[in-house]
Image (tube, rainbow, N blue to C red; front, side):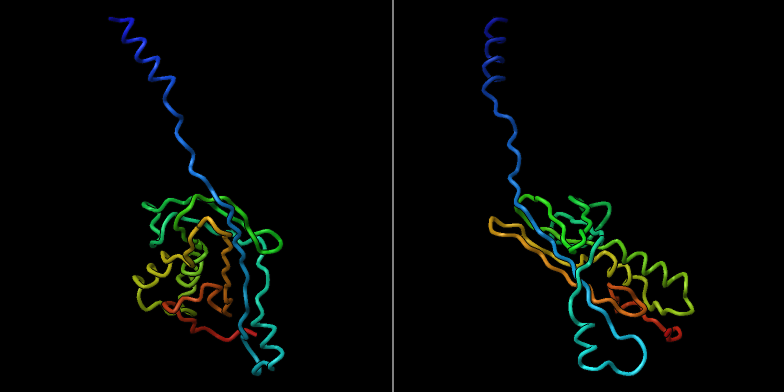
Length: 174
């Protein structure tokens, strides 16, 4: 009897397949930024075109999470942390599916505004926390070519994730 049980386990063990690894596809993420006109006379058309032209964003750190949902540190699966190269690009391999990119620098903008409360108006903390937890973009990884692009619009006093829920009320800095 023992021999039959041992033989059965041996057959089962050697015929089991190793778990299959999920196939991945290459993803290229391109990050750029544009600038705002902050002080002085209204820019000329040429100056405005320069401000509005997307520039490569090197060394920008972002996190990729699984799914299309609000970021929740306790429930979101961070699948990668990327840092853009000198051309503002990052490359990684991801399984097919839905993803979002979150920007943890939003929290730094909020903390700066709270620390400098004379210069910033924060009407509702709840709205700020919703903004902080909202991904900056969503994308799908498919069998086709996967290129994701995001442009940050840098504002003068509120950084590059210009929140409508925080208002700069301080002096105009030249």
